[in-house]
Image (cartoon, rainbow, N blue to C red; front, side):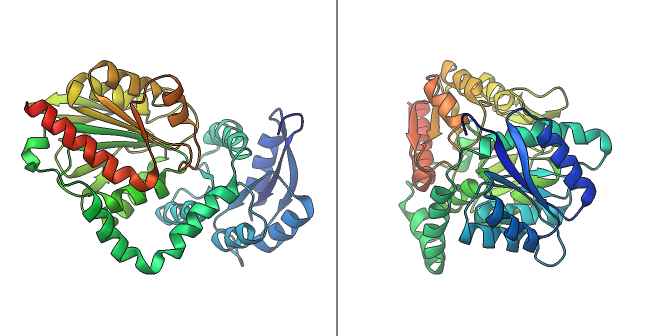
Length: 370
């Protein structure tokens, strides 16, 4: 995109939302509105005619809705697409489906006028700029390979679990250890792959996925239904337990406080850290303080640099850090920064994620038992 503006097509059935998005794009240096459309069919016609660099696409539209429009777009003219979702449970669920199918990112429509500046003038331009450089065809190839194996998915889940190293430990032996995982753009599909392959026993897992508050609970439900581990949205006072993964709720920082040999969850407000709330850095730094060499950090796909300082803290405390590699990441951003700054011990591909994490947990358990 060097040397020219990023051209954006805005597709939304609400005239007000279209105007707000277009105003934000036009006010951002290096961007311009290529066109606007009020429904899916008009959006597809404008896409072919205007050849934009990025599309913002409303999910709930009359006639051809956002999911159907996205499917047509990606089949005929793959272009980085950011979904514009309502802040409802249904909106969150459909958004997760869109991300699985190949959308790059999303924003949630502001519920109050005061939030519009943050969402449309700050968050959306940042995501547009990042999406403009994404190779959508590569991401779709990853999705297609997954779809081609759909008929064997049940067998593959079993095979993946059986191929994952078995940890010869009682769950209680893992209660004083922790896996601290940070992830952002491209995260929901990647987490699905990871959790489908994980076997028990596992230490307590804490996850920060950059998402609004209405999205983290549906994500937890989705992962819980596909995994042998229990997965749910974290609440203040939750005590970390083996075979339980807790996802930080959107809009709240998650920190850990000592509780006997393990830790409990503290949720708090406060300004964004590393441009995010919840912040991976906040969560990982607190995990490093409590668990030290018994902490395994995992940094995965996502834009920005949140998590690099947290990975550094884990390594400084004697823990170990795994980072998702470039080839299997939708966006090689947070994990790239952590790797380039020397805060990752070893990289892994998404297909090997469950096995790599299990192997490291096995080594961690053996090391602290010596």
